[in-house]
Image 1 (spheres, rainbow, N blue to C red):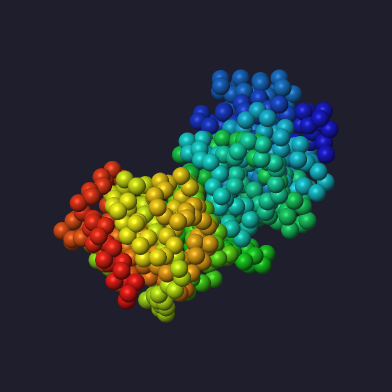
Image 2: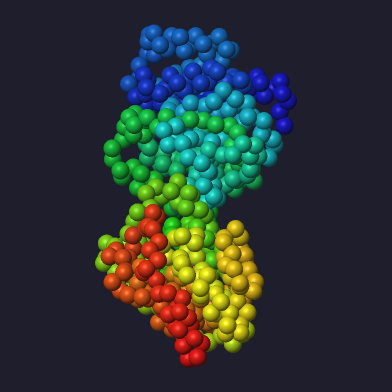
Length: 519
């Protein structure tokens, strides 16, 4: 490792900036940021691929160049051949006399301690060290799916693009992006790329790894990407440059024998019951997307805990990664398609899946327990049954052990025999399998039971929701009147008040329960 003195002096570092038509936009910011580094490079080389101005004659640059000299840095402006940044970086390998090169884009602004932090990671085994390079008008926290593994290159979520939590340690990565320091003696740029140099940094740094060196990402070193809309590679309007480079990169991938991951995203920004409804579609889903790597952005990953080959991420990660999620909103899709079938079928149609083939085994429960799930979100919710105080003693009269399930902190119904709070989904399904029956409102429970290998049917109490859409025919669906159904079944429930008169009274519900048990 470098000593503290060597680190502060910059050791053997040449800063290289390739620029095009950004003399009076972002290039001055990049150069001034170099002047302010706590660890300064020995030399700064600017490759000018633009107008080839004599910047010494420009008042602004007379100040900048004077500062570079004042801080002890040699500097020069070299006219490029206007053949693109790769050609300039290749020239820098010949011109630099230092062991290390710090490549900096002309619209990058490194924080003052960036070079110091990067150099602290240098050792004999290191090929390149990079920090974060964050677009300064699109600052986002690090999503859990971000990856600098070469097989994830088409995921498009580089770990250097995001803000990290504090005190994250440096880590080894496969490749680096945009701005980093690298060991000059082992560097080799691809000479076949177009003037835009698409994927040049990936190829440069990954091939260093193939040579036996490690690439380090230090999240504490932060560079801001001003992402200037003009100049640089944005001077080139011919999109064939990018497609040409992508073909070169694809060939390299083959030469490296890298198996690229083909990703399939699924967004489940909805309730627990909806997750179970989607779960019944998974055999068809995986059949359609076989050989792909699955990422589920979900609110309840525990629903799919048996699927070890799926990576789970949050809805917040989905918004960072994909932006607007409206196109993945199931209920929006159901509204747009005037949907009249079941929830599971809606998922199947939305994801364009083959017909679901599922052997449903419905087996009435034989245990001595009746499980009740009385609430939807909270006792006063519009879907929560309001007459439990009257109904519970009637259920108790049947001679079964009555157990209430729910989340810890929910209101306890008086008179029940036991309370099972916050059970894991796996444990809850086990206990459902051993019960005589279950009784719920329109909540997650009927969907969870429908996803089980052997379905124990139950009784569901409804008011405004349509059981033909959200229920299952093998259950006893208790609906007072269809005239109370909401006109739009797929609207959100926020702010909807409970209307007690829409529910069957306790004696009517009890009649359904006894008939269900007798049948």
